[in-house]
Length: 158
Length: 152
Image (cartoon, rainbow over all chains, first blue to last red; front, top):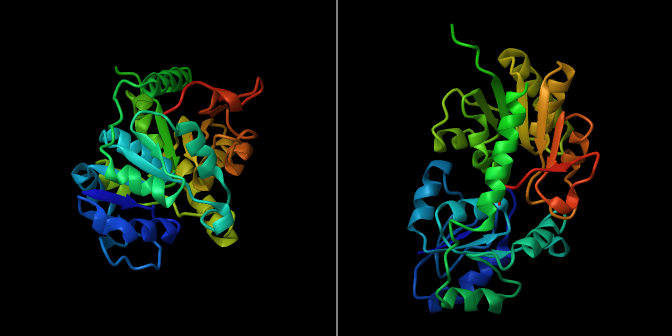
């Protein structure tokens, strides 16, 4: 299953519509979590919001995640070892307050298991390919361990 | 006689801020920890008991922000944590502010989503937090925010 998720705070009809236009060409079924969007998908299953308690199960069942460039989804995809395709929200199209998602993807592009789609064609091509999953031994694990140790030491000195 | 455990209040909004807080949970091992977030379902998702709920707020709503501040303040008064930690956004900042007013240690870790500049909450946190961190080396400065690693 391909999971499309746009987060709960803001609509992202451009992404939902884009996947919907070629959903019939894909070899796997698609489930889209459309949040506050108003576009109704025609060619794929959709749900407004996935309950937090069900979210992990849906993630586990997915083979690929398509998402806005939200850190929560990136971290969850990494936790479950799933490849993720990111489509940044653009301020010019009223999709976010600013272009921080563009900045975020500029730092994430090229990391194992993370793919950035800047156009509908990019997105479609990635979904037709077999994508690599993120590795559990990438450099971000060391960064996380270092942050956790630093915080722990700081808290202990209180 | 056992030594009293340090009490930590860890507060953040739902979504990415919360997932980042969960990713650094190892830092609170051995502490008496209380979590607070804006989406109640997230506490159940991570099997957290005794978690607290903060009203969501942003710079767009003054009424919600005032309500959020008072909730944050009452949580800090009631829970009496030794340390308050947040990954953002505004609701977490209010917990830090309440902590500063009551003389607690406060930790701000700016979201890893902010790669070009700190968030508004993150900038304000610089005036409040006793430990002020960014998750990007290139955003760190000698006077803070400092860099000590990142969840991603």
